[in-house]
Image (tube, rainbow, N blue to C red; front, top):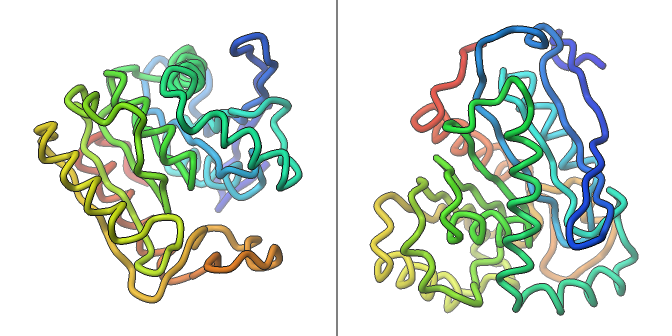
Length: 252
């Protein structure tokens, strides 16, 4: 497929985690395939509803900028789930740091195995519970240079493990997000300070709710959930600026 005049090579990648067949989405600039120069990689983790076209398209946007991007799957089958089923799975997963980290590390292994990826220049980004997964991956001590969360879950079953975070951390939150209230943000700030994380920040967008990066969320009618184009664009720019600082990608 083509994206802004860049031809992309995309593929569904199957892999197993704890006996469950996952199907992620890999995207890379077709012109880079076969070259010897390694590129920075970006691991993407989807929202709590499952791997969707929004996250796949963001992997492709990153690939068009010269990154190798892989959107992992943490439910299985590489698809969205009915709301009730997704919520039931998250309820079990949210308190199991080991399971979250296994899912994240499995996706990271797929990304790092790509012949174009430089494992020393990798970032993890996530949306909603995907933000939780990206943070837990960093808390596990995974070699990441940047971690970015969009309307992310900030709570951790083992917050003391934030002492293992070596990456630069950027969390992008809506001030009116019912999932991430003021108290949650304050606890996260204290966690970062106590853990001695060297480089972290929270960007807060006034009048913005949950899932502000997902244009399809309004149709679901969840209270406090709404797409916000300005916050979406601002947070994406902040992410790219951080990548410029930490990954030094090729310039297009």
